[in-house]
Image (tube, rainbow, N blue to C red):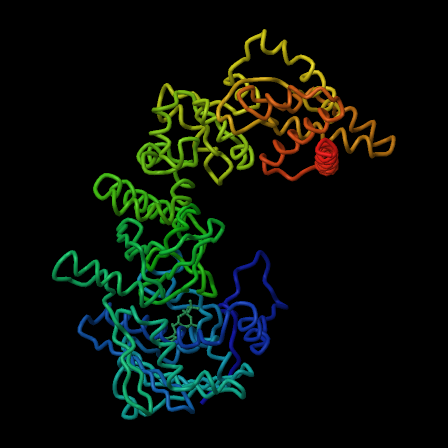
Amino acid sequence: MSEASPTIGGMPHYPQPDRPLADAHAFQVDLRGLVDLLSHHLYSSPRVYIRELLQNAVDAVTARLGADPAAPTGIRLTADGETVLIADPGIGLTEADVHRFLATIGRSSKRDDLAGARREFLGQFGIGLLACFTVADTIRVTTRSAADPAAAPVEWLAGSDGRYSIRTLDPAQFPEPGTRVLLTPRPGAQRWFAPERVAQLAREFGALLPYEVVVATPDGLVRTTDSPPVWDRAHPSPAARRLALFEYGERTLGFAALDVIELDVPLAGVRGAAYVLPSAANPADAGRHRVHLKGMLLSDATTGLLPDWAFFVRCVIDTDTLRPTASREGLYEDETLSAVREALGVRIRDWLTDLAAQDPARLAAFLAVHALGVKALARHDRELMRIMLPFLEFETTDGRVPLTEFARNHPTVYLARTVDEFRQVAPIAAAQGIGVVNGGYTYDADLVEQLPQVIPGTVVGELGADVVTAHLDLVNPAEELALAGFLAAARATLDPLDCDVVLRAFAPVSVPALHLDNRDARHERARAETMAAADELWAEILGALKSSAPRAQLVLNHHSPVVRRLSGITDRALLTTAVEALYGQALLMTHRPLRPADTALLNRAFGDLLAWASLAARAGDGDGV
Ligand SMILES: Nc1ncnc2c1ncn2[C@@H]1O[C@H](COP(=O)(O)OP(=O)(O)OP(=O)(O)O)[C@@H](O)[C@H]1O
């Protein structure tokens, strides 16, 4: 029996330096420090020790099958509450292998020196076994090599203090090739050895592994593998296959999907399914997918697997091309991953276009929940936009309608940039036949702007106050002249508020006045107000920014009975109050927050109107006496 300390990455096989390293030393490893690093900074939880044990067992079985396709494959975990034992009938190790691989941190038998990690194996980094030290104080490995039947079986006993011993065993004690790993818990880690927890972890990580794994517990044998995966099984009919996929999704992801999209991208080595979320998803949510690498669960919250726009699906996949990060809890971002991401994106997009062509009712059900996702996708994909546009509804002056239909009825499509702007003008614009789309919602303005490329001949214009006024009927000059006094008084009242007054005739008659404004004008007013309140330096800077933005407009409706009645008022003070009240009412209709000056004006107008009313009432009483 010999005793030694582990070395790092195959040390002391020094590279050949230019000059001999006469005074060379080997790196030492502080195993406790390393395990501490792994458990606090690499692995999210000690539970991964089961995954690492399973992984080594699976790789060992795969390696032996390579040489002997008839070799046994069953893997058995035994959890008695005190210890955990895993036994595999795999390739095993000779004493030299033990020193070389088990006891050398960072060295793996699963890497070709030039080609990197070999595709058929799960492991590659040569650190997995260390995960066991996050829960165990000692690891006892007994192993017999299948590759070298003459080699005696050996026992390797390693402690978390960084020391190990090795001894040869009597071949009669270990007649068959294979490996057994026995772990004894470190203080405080007993809970990770509870039989039901071991079985649950084996099922969670290893349900799709290619070889049968059973867990022997005091309550009996538990089979934790359930392979081949549902997508690789034969089903009696396409409907039965779909049903099986739905059931599998609900069991593993925890929600009843709206739809399921099969993923089979042979070039990318990906098989599985994408499940459409049953309720609207947050576009900023990076998407959490359940990813298996060669059957072993990598993580159920893997990000970066799909393009950002595909936030409406969650995938369950198995792949043999993608690489894990060293923690084996995420995907390594490389060219393969971006190719897979693109291929899966194409698959989901194709599913959408097929749905549009073959099953509009199912597409409508999908869009009722995920229109936002499709809009996000369509922005970058003109072809998809062309296909989806007839199905995507937008808020417009014709109600919620698809843009294609809207563009057919309105050769010029006006775009209101904010929800407020749309609300402000929609009823009036609709009455004048102006076609306006509310561009205030996420992605809508982008899509409307691309409309001319998708439907040639369509013109998209910005909706400004001038567009609306241009569509309102002019009042005949003689009639306008008759109201000149009233209009002059109204202009004088509103001029200090940076608002012009114009007279037009428009529908509906129930709207006496319309406050038309645009963002430039609002910014200009805000700037002017700040300037008035600012000190000299700021006033100068703000003054330099002054622009000749159009002023707001109060458009009085000549058809409105209220306006007609007002124009008959001769008392100047009452007229001022009435104009202020009209202006205030029009402002309230815009649903925008009021400036302090506007609030003051509204209060004053209301108070004055009350005073006028009580005066009139008293005068009426007086008449009666
Ligand atoms: N059950 C086993 N049967 C045979 N060899 C094993 C077994 N477990 C571990 N080994 C050997 O020990 C080496 C180190 O194992 P370890 O789990 O630390 O790393 P790995 O599996 O190579 O890579 P990773 O860090 O990615 O898991 C393996 O490369 C393998 O040669």
